[in-house]
Amino acid sequence: MAKEKIGIMGGTFNPIHNGHVAMAEAAQRAAGLDRVLMLPDRVPPHKTGIAPAEDRWRMVCAAVWNHAGLEPCRAELDREGTTYSFDTLTNLHSLYPRAELYFIIGTDTLMQLKSWHRWEEVLRLCTFLVCPRTTAYRPEEINAERKRLTALGGRFQPVAMPVINVSSTELRDAIAAGKPTPLLHPAVREYCLLRGFYGAEPGCAEAEGWLAELFRTLNRHRFVHSLCVAGTARMLARIHGVSPEKAETAALLHDCAKCMPLREMQRVAAERRLTEDEFILGSSAMLHAPVGACLCREVYGVEDPEILHAIACHTTGQAGMSKLDLIVWLADKIEPTREARPEIVKGRMMAPLSLEKATLTVMEASAAYVMSRGRGMHPATMDAIAWLKQEIAG
Image 1 (cartoon, one colour):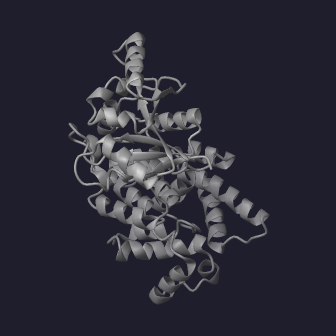
Image 2 (image 1 turned 45 degrees about the vertical axis):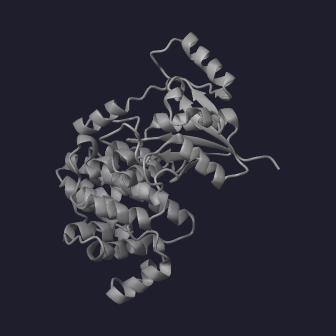
Image 3 (image 1 turned 180 degrees about the horizontal axis):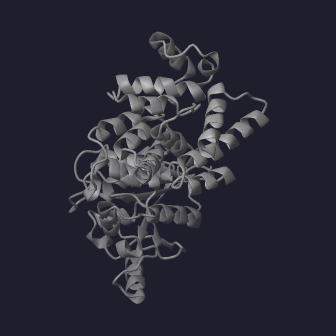
């Protein structure tokens, strides 16, 4: 039986960015790796001013959730003390005794290998996959160092890919200044803003606890989605004169009940007398909204009735929706990780100009799709569509 080929991509990931992901995927293709373990450091030697380990862990999970073969790994986070690659490789060999390990590095790191803790032993524990990076070293110096290390037992394989130069310092500065960060996954950017990392103004005082609870109770896809909805809602709120804090809170928590089993949702709905609507009670896709509003009050401590209402109606919509209601409903549908279907693209373009027109466009398309599948729409949605048409007509 062939050995499994496992790649290792370690780093501070402060924060993880698209350059890290691109390197991991290029190495995966070049060496035919079965998977790549993404390992955030616990206590990196000689580094200060980094985000807490658990926050960086969640950001790594968010950044790679839909990248096949890239797996977040806690091998370094769960070990006490300073992180050294020798210890990590030794640990991984014990966890995967039949695997071949491939350590993904850049050419800049290749030139620093001799400074690593127990570096001569590290050379024997893995094959190094070397990705091109811009460095101060000349190509002939890099080739000479690779030959010296190979003579000492090192194994090196080049990874053919474009040179990716992403400055984590520049990304952190952009977050602090509120500038665009196209090289960050939007969920990672939103996580940093909510937590107030890297000089950003914290999104809300409760973000630390809320994010921990959402990460615990939601699957990775839903966690990423919730972060992206929060970022989209905050942007729309600023444009349309709605409290960004309220929009961000409602959007972040809108799906807090989404991953509950239907029977558990039904139990909560019955005990709290949330609804007697059989249409809603029979569908987790709709019931998670009123149940989520209940959890927001009881678990997350949100008392604002406008926020709770926006969460409760974010699935069906309804006639007379407030601007906050419209923002949360629309952000849920057009956030950047959603598939770029024609109505979604159109909704994204229209949303900064008119919440009503953008919502009507997406809502009508959703209703048409549902009914084309032989299913009925909830009356509240049809009422919302009729109301939006009246509002737009003036």
